[in-house]
Image (cartoon, rainbow, N blue to C red; front, side, top):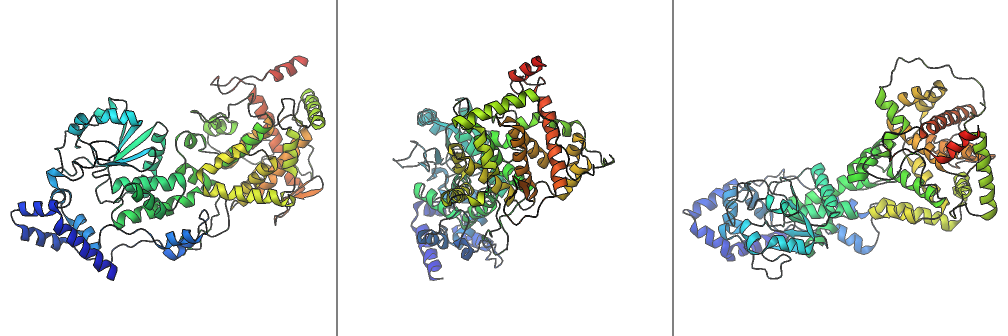
Length: 618
């Protein structure tokens, strides 16, 4: 209370001594009437919205360090720059009077800066990061007089983001143009500078989804070059957006982001509402960035929520947080699974597929999947009768491999076993197979520690996903893959999916149309992964399929007289396991047939040379 009284007195003294404030008050025809009218509009609402953030629960989060300094920062959040009275004055005053009372009117202190050390000469501006410039709004006169366009080009600024609404602060600084702003946006666009406008009222609140969209646009714009952001003064809304971007890009706390912005751009993020906006954005975004599901509590609020999620929930969160090509390509596929599998293939030199191009590019590769084409062809027919399942306890495996191809694979596998490397000098596929069927609970302590640290890093830091591209141990990669599958709240192939597969044992199309899109899409990607993993004998690929099946169903299977995984999973029945594996093998046969067909796009599907030779031998 004492602190609040001191801040209020200091603010009143500041206003009394402020030349701009006293000058504009003296110019008013009825100063006393104006002040009384403003004070009558200031309502001290007891039900004013408070922060939903419980500061006591700030002490722990899954990506936060546990140091004393970290706890000190969390328990002492940044304070607003205005008192409650000052905030109510600003939000209750009409826009026409706001300019005169708080900015300086036609002689606006922000639009006519005297700052000599400004980042851009002629504009009240500061570099918040090496690539993000916060600035006051420019004007047509300043752009011409100070050669702002040339300054932008010399600094490498390729994008301007405007957070104003047309017509705001019309009494501040130079007059508005026909665009509703103090400049014509076409000036920038005509000079090869991208321009975005997000209408955000001054002292108003932006929706959390809107802030996330703005952060994505900012992240995309930074790929082209540096970015300049402005509102009116470049302090409030501009500071909020930059702080939210730092939370989005660096996965840091809102309070730390606010402090960083204020350090580089003093007096930014001025009101308690703006501070609350960044804090709420943190609580909206960061739980969606968790990659590995866990039963540990989130501990952001008092709600007993955990970090567990299903595949569908993860894909929804992934679509919310990714942007650009990643958002398009990984709409139906978990990015973490893609990164781990592609890294395993790259280690053994199998990443350049003779079928689809699995690289991240404009056209999503999953649109060429058999599952996608079947689903787009027609919707599932619930009236289709189920096929009578075969009653054998153990089914003979489907003949899915050409005998000549199998001989070649076995020969190459023997060579790699003897030499310890594949024919192209990469890691042999046999080592990847051994990593798949290994009991990861028996790994050496250093590898288990490495697994745990890498898992935590991926959960905590956005850039940690790139560490997968540098990992060379297939046991670590397969361990992460199994951790992700087996940590999900629900198995990817649940009892309903297994019933569908058993009921439609020989009809792949019926199974595909009856199962959930995200489930069967992931299954096809994993089958394509096994196809691309070579040279490897057929029986070893089947064992890899069994191990993958165990993770997908959260049930243990027997491989080489050993039950995997060694978790508290129940055992998958042998008959069910056999039928599901046969379904996977039938699907592999269809995928191999599809691989030799000419694709719609020449860049997507090519005819593998070795397949043509095999046909010639027949």
